[in-house]
Image (cartoon, rainbow, N blue to C red):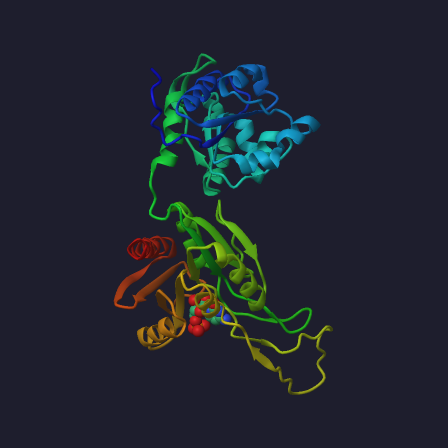
Length: 405
Ligand code: C5P
């Protein structure tokens, strides 16, 4: 009798990376277990991994050709590094050697596996395995920190007897533990799984001439914190960002823009496929009527600039896509709640988040204070770290959405 597979891994596309360590023999068992749970598994090996275990073993277990070469014309024709990077729902590199951690931490791309890691948007899990002294070495520990900060999932090695005969920390986690870690990633039903969230963030820049522009003090921190939290809560996240000094959060598709008009164009296009739109951007209300093609010279005592009103991105998105759940921000220096309520109605929003600015509050800070308002309700979130507030705001949004749908 064939037993039905009950697993959250069914049809999930798992790319197993193997770098060159003795623990590679355990990875054969990991692949076997994932296949048993119904996953589609492909394997990519570094050249030194092939010295420890043959690609043929992994091919037989995964039922797919094994990828080893960055510059192999035939392999590229079948499924090249970019396709593999896109194909994967999750990447697990087991074992990850000290050398491979260093490569990832420095963004190298001179073998197929590290190239895939740079090109993918899938979550990357690492199962390090190495001699205990190599693990404890400050260089490895620094690399570990860098990778964790870049949202790699690092599953630290266990204590025990090592292949080299020493006893200490460095043994790769067992195949069964790694298989459970992978399965758990797909099991958790997250509050925003299945939702597509579009966020605008940062300031805009309105050019005056080739070297000057009008802008504001927005750092983008609140919008980026929301993007990161939405991703962690299971959403597909797209960020349209003005110029900021922040990196795109892992797994978030970012479109960089400069002016309000560019942001308007991107947001209107991307909103078509979104479920939730959160406008945190501090969009310049006005832009110069004419952008001088040459640098404006000092020629008069008084220089006047004619400014024209910019499109209101949030207003246009919410009116054009009435089914979209729209959330606006209202940065106010006075009459916070009243002004926010007016914006909620005028811009036809589902929710507005008011926050006080000025007096050293709001802009370019790591903390914020939020008043969240909707048609018949109001929640105050006292001053806190922007990351924490972002998560709380999204949980409130997720409750409203599930009520609506
Ligand atoms: O009208 P006000 O600028 O105060 O509204 C703030 C809200 O509207 C924010 O959510 C902001 O991102 C959005 N906005 C916009 N496009 C503009 C001006 C504001 O999307 N041109």
